[in-house]
Each structure stands twice: as structure tokens, then as C-alpha cells.
Image (cartoon, rainbow, N blue to C red):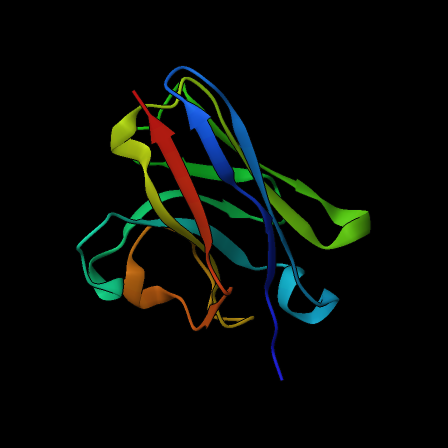
Amino acid sequence: QVQLVQSGGGSVQAGGSLRLACTTSEYIYTKNCMAWFHQAPGKKREDSEGVAAIYTVGDFTYYHGSVKGRFTISQENAKNTVYLQMNSLTPEDTGMYFCAADRPGDGGCGLNYWRFDYWGQGTQVNVSS
């Protein structure tokens, strides 16, 4: 059974920072596209917005325009873990954040929701003004 285990998140004031982590198996992590999605309050899960993605070989990264310069996606190979460092948070960043992984071998990477086959349990992020 494929598992993506998330940690981090919480509540912070506008302008603050949070870091999310997503750990999975070596099989899922290696040579794969992994991403973070933001489900805004009141929106359906399938309408989640991809905010950042990384291909775990070559360190190729992709960002949604709304988070460029504020969020950083990174990886730690020894722990099969992908991180999302979120800085300069605004109330619009509030919502559930999901880690996602593509099926190994599919190739490519990006922020399309329907690319991803495996999902974490979700982490709540609350940003107050």
C-alpha cells in the first residue's frame, strides 16, 4: 500500500512561515514527480491548486505564479522526503495542503491535479490577518 505521510502545518499570522514535509517509500520517491496542492476553503478536492512540484532526479521544480518567491519545494533523498517551505504567508494561503506523487515511470512533472496517483492525508494551514 502506497503511503505519503505528511507533517507540519498549523496556524500562523500573515507574514509568517511554515514548513510542510511529506515522506514516502523509496519506490515512490525515486525518479518521480512529487507535488503540493492547496485546497482552499469551500472548494472541492479535485479543484485543488498545484502550488509546487519537484522531479526528484535533477531537482527540477515547478511553481504556481501565486507562490513564486514565497514558497520553496525541496527534497531530502536520505529520508525520501519532500518539503514545502512557505514564507510570507497570506490569509489566501489558508486551507488544506496535500502532498501528491505520480506513478513511478510515468515521466515528466508538473502541477496538473490529474497527473498524480497517490496522495497524503492532508495538513491544515491557517493564516490569520
